[in-house]
Image 1 (cartoon, rainbow, N blue to C red):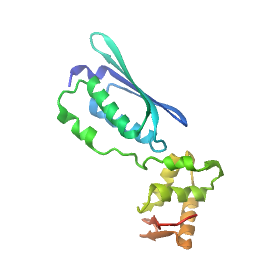
Image 2: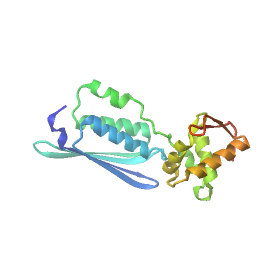
Image 3: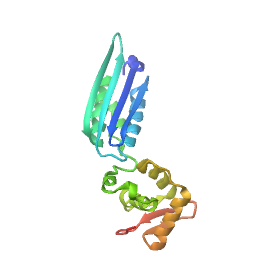
Length: 198
C-alpha cells in the first residue's frame, strides 16, 4: 500500500425506511476502514433487505480528489462487494492476497435480514408477541440465551425490554409447551419448537 493512506477520508451515508445514517472514517488503513464499514453494514441490514448507500472517499496526495459511488436499493451482498471493490481502488491495493481475509470471510448480519417485520403491524403487537416473533424468524432451530434476545430485541424493534419481563415471557412459552430449555439458570438456553404459535 502507499504511504498516503493516512490522508484518506471516507464517508458512508445510507437511507432506509427508518431514516438515514452515516459513518465518517479518517486516517485508517484499508483493514481498519473495512472492519468499521463491515460493522456499519451489519447494523444497516439487520432490519432491512434493501438500502440506498452513498460512499464518498477523499484522497489527498499532491492534490485532493473526491470519488463517489451511489448504490440504489441494494441488497447486502451486492453492497458488500461493491464497497470492497471501491475501497480497493481508493487504497490502490494491487496484491489480491491482501484482500482475501477481509473480503472473503463471512460478515453476515448478526441477526440476519429481518424482512419479516414488514408482515406485521408492530404498533399493535405486545412485547410477548414480539419476543415470540424473534424466536420464530431469527432463531429457527437454534438455541438462544435470554441476554442475547434482549440485545436483539433492542436492535430489531428499536426499544428496550427488561430482562425480567423477557424471562417471564420465555417461562410462559415453556410452560405452554412452545419452547424447550436447557442449562442451569445462569446459562439457560431456549429453543422454539416447530409449528408453535403465540
